[in-house]
Image 1 (spheres, rainbow, N blue to C red):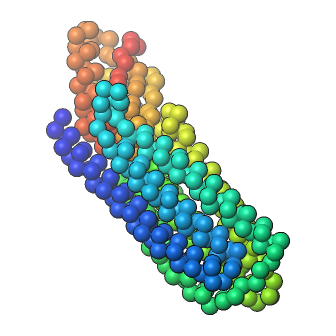
Image 2: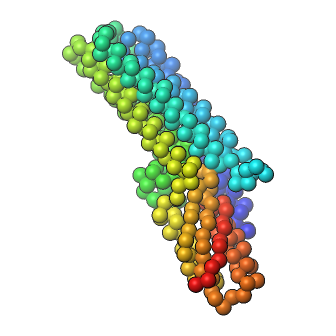
Length: 315
């Protein structure tokens, strides 16, 4: 059990890093939301209005992600013996649906209205200036999220894309996806406004707003599906299950893992349930001691494993 103090330090460090990532995203999103709102009022651009909806939706989502971060850190109690870690996935799911409902639908609606009414943009310079500033701010937030994911990928010996897909932290994944969508949305808006500037037609600007809405819908659906899968008890990746199985078999007296279930009960907190084949020469009392000792060793060796339940069975 000597590994537990170090485990706590690692967990607190990564939690603080996730909190920093959300705070950076919230500050940048609020800044860009206000700037884009002013630009949308001045220019009348459909794409700028879509990006305004996007930025305010992202700001609201960051607040929900802060709630997720706080709620998931509560200590276990009698009613929640496994802790509150899965609250992070619930609030992240609510946040992802918020992106879809507020950002995607309003953006598509704004684009359709732009196609119908075709309002000309008043000041292109304001639009270009605000989009340039927004691109820098959104990029700064994306760099922070990328930095955290890259560090975690290095610790787990994964590629960056593997970590983005398999990470058990819904908060940093949501921030990265939203910031990436914000940057791409800025690019869509810039192209749509520039084409409007060159051609004199408001159609490209309206189409850009619709594309921004579709982009947000795709991101929201992906995030919601990932968080929903964890909430209903989806199995961890085959690679992680294989690593944990190897750790179990490495314990003296355990000859094989016949079945294993690894589910996440919170960010970087896995619950392992495994059926193991025990050396047949061992007596009942020794088997019980072996299982308890192996469970303690596994929790101490891996910062991911929060609970282990080994079920011995004959070969």
